Image (cartoon, rainbow, N blue to C red; front, top):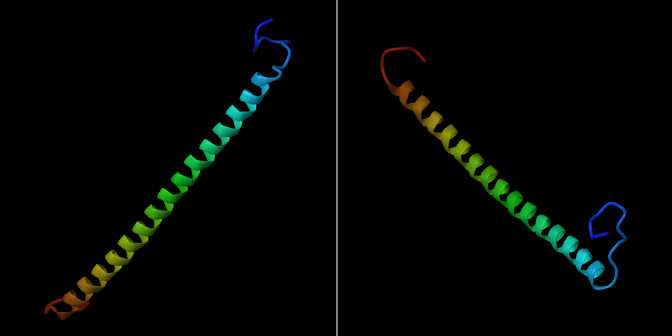
Length: 74
């Protein structure tokens, strides 16, 4: 039976260590990628909050400007 066939014996020696190393390396890589994605999301959230704050300030300025205009009562 070849490696990976149903009922094949588990690899021993060098192959077993390599398989364990490969799994560990893949897990570490997945953790690294997940951390990078979380950092990007945090940066986007921060930028979005700053943009929202800026938009709120602009709305405030627009309201102040329109109140100073003649005509309609605001």
